[in-house]
Length: 357
Image 1 (cartoon, rainbow, N blue to C red):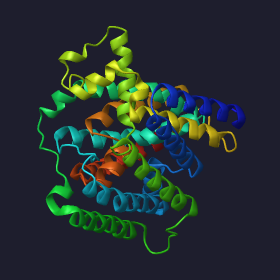
Image 2: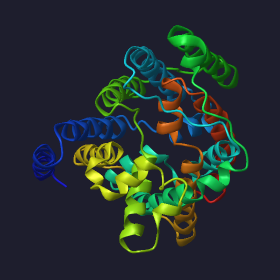
Image 3: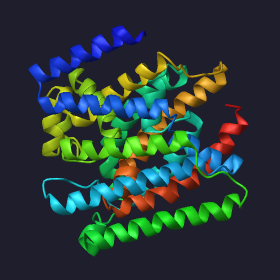
Image 4: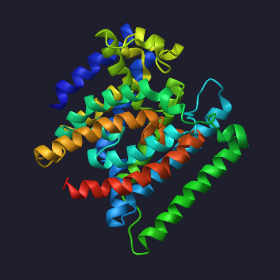
């Protein structure tokens, strides 16, 4: 799509949100557009960064992700300590988290994109990610439907580092752990590597700023997965295929209310739409390259996308909701998610290589 008609569509949608929904939602749309432009313009891929580290011993992507996490934490933790109306992205340490994060890390490599990666690559017009998007939503919905059964296997109450250590202690521990990640990366890649790339650095700074604005406007950290699941849940309810009243997840007051409202009231939905719009804007000038896939590759990729959606709900988020937002707002579950997802990625890159994606 050319940029002029796209700008007209985004402007019309922005005005519609102001008139029919709320000013907050219209501004969050712009935040989402910025996120999509930053992700697509910088090709800031969480999946790609991990794969490059494993296969090429290239630390640039991980360096960019650590910078993003550090900047987001420096902003979010003091804000959460100052304003009680802001909420952290807390998830319970659980069997569900362990399994979900591991499977997510594995499948995101096969699908070549996490939650945000699937969104922005779909916006860039990558065929596989466009096909994965609805399957990710369906998987996320089914994961939410089954979440109570997974949690029954064992869980603890969510643990906030801020509650345990105070704002300064939580921030200090977070930065120390991020430094430890860089040390571990240095041991893996060796001395003769280029650590910094302008594209990754610019993307990290832009996303940290936008994630902070999202926290202030939405009252909650940036997320992706919930919006996907909500879309599928509303479709299932509308078709008479699902009764949310008897479900542990969708029967909760807040979730049940969102099922009765327009999806445009959901902050995650709005930023997800914005990410697609921002990526489309970038694609008008810099379309993504994608090689043709065989039938086998299509089937494997689409199945991986569905399982990735399912596991993202079990893990209480993806690289955005669990890793970025969890860690930057002091949730212990974010630090559990990372090593489990990375362990899954170690297998995922080998599966991806086997099927020659």
